[in-house]
Length: 312
Length: 301
Image 1 (cartoon, chains in turn blue, green):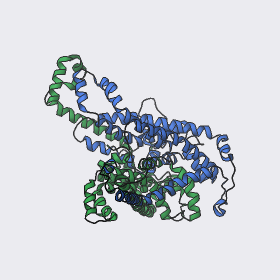
Image 2 (cartoon, one colour; image 1 turned 90 degrees about the vertical axis):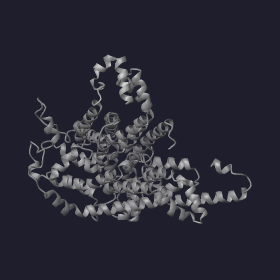
Image 3 (tube, chains in turn red, brown; image 1 turned 30 degrees about the vertical axis):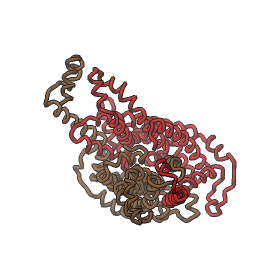
Image 4 (cartoon, each protein chain N blue to C red; image 1 turned 60 degrees about the vertical axis):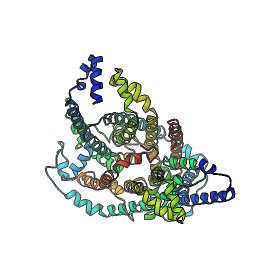
């Protein structure tokens, strides 16, 4: 912009006309996407907030009328016995998933910074779990978790002293652990790729210098890698949070929120209200709570992004 | 060479450290051997992490009866193609449905995102930074929020159980993503090329078609492949915006298959294997862009 502004004052009139024309061209190219974003993000977002204050019945679909009920939907949701458990499950699922995804992803990223034959190929193949349709991954894990015939229990029984299999998907706390493990598996590649990219951008020279100064591997990690990786770490963790909070497919495919709501998160609970009980009001209320949480997390993410100095 | 020298110097300075880590011994050939040991460990890591995929393929070739025993067969010794036969019989039309939806998602995504990415990368647009922030943040809106509202709106517009409706909904995950990836790469197109075309009398659409699109071919293909994968993998919109009476995408097919007959793991795993094929293709085709794709172009490696 500044370069154009500096190119002489002589043709100012002509330039302002070109400016206007340039703006029009830019807008023309952007309009289709802008309309789409407004229609398919903006409007649903607004509509969802509205729905949270309305009473939607199956009749509403024909008449298009839904009476305004104030905060009744929110009262329904908050006084439901599923409310606090759903919040708790969402928190445990999110924190548990991210902690292990990040730790394992970082370990792998560090491992793959070494140069060795086929490292690029192996690293690329590790991405597969992230690219699979989530419902496929959950189908695989559901089969592996099968209480009687699943491979997870078969392997566990190889451990001396373990005779009985774990009721992975049929008992509450185990089911929560099961969906977290499956989700960790799915998220490892995501963490690995981003952290590997971050590690690549740290200059190798400083490691050489530190080696010469006699810094051990742990010291190099603790005092050089970790602080220098911090901006990327923040981005990875915040993105992980944003993506994990809204996980739907994995839980639906593995437990459907069950048994007895014991793996119900805000996302699956909202689905249950809207699409299984056809109570769209409370369903919208739950997903609005999700929006509030996602917004707070998203703002934190943008802040971390800005702090890391990446203009994008 | 310098590395070896540095190592030698280090062993002189701190002999104790060398003893603690024998791999640092300053032998000439050891570096290469050590590198191959890393490869072996890398293969082991890969085998552990990709074991679930092997387990899927393994089960897809074993008769259902053989799968239901307490001691699992680690290899498909009793080989069968029944699972794939039943996949083609019961899920074949669902696979076709998903192909149509995914291709439609690609077309919609590229038509909307390519010009927008160009505008954000190369043209004058008002409030560019804010627009970029909008594109980044809309990616974070939970899908269930959109599903709730879209269901109500679609019901009134008769877009439930409608191909176009599902394509438009699936494009929500793909469009912001595609804009960010393509924009990141379009920024590298030299301004001079576009100026030269304008001087030669090309209109704005001409510049876009004859310079920008050909030069961004790789990023357009990448965005398109990701859009395909989004459409192919989508489950949330597929399960909320269809009733199962008109057509069923394959993800919903697997979901219902799992729920209905948990005993037929052979069939479920065969379908899952078929549904995994696009992911494998994507990995082979655009491996080096996946890092950019993973973040939706928000962070460029």
